[in-house]
Image 1: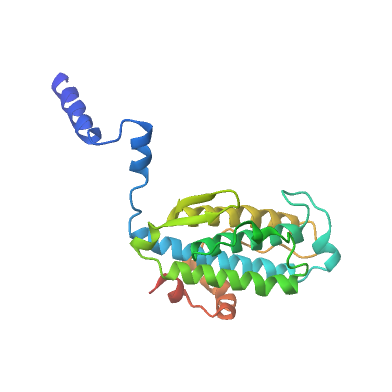
Image 2: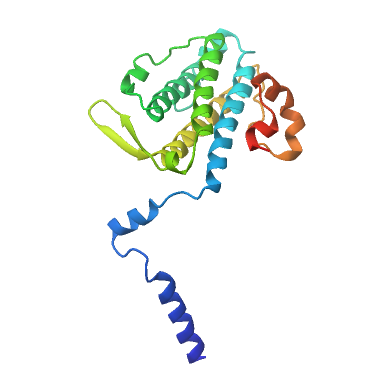
Length: 220
């Protein structure tokens, strides 16, 4: 038993010998390049984001303008305000990924698209930009430092980490808009699946509208 314990401790010591010991060293350890297999996941996230926006905004197109603007419970006070927030923050971060300096000018107008008919093509356009950026991803690009202009300072983030933040932001606020739809005449669409194989037929029409196939997303 003693020998076994000693062996186990030795093995553990060997496994952690090269791990960072200080907070600063640990942070550098966490910044190691993301495995190449994750590049496809990031690309798929960009496609899923665009598809989810397409499906959600198609549902919102059934709303009256009064319903679209009506006060509701959420981080933002209406479906209109919530979906416009998604749009302007997408523009902010996609511009940064592309090397731009748009910065806070992105939200100079908090509701750039007051109607769903204006919002749908605007959101689709920035979704296509994000997909194009992710389609060009390679290991070097995923590890590139992105400069995010915030007016008084420039935030520096690794590209893959910034993408994950952006996807999380989109999911968070899209979920709120989805919940708000429950109190309207338009039933909220299903958004809780991630391109499962079994449900491919249920999104085939939308993929056709978007100009994609399953093979486009998965590079098959």
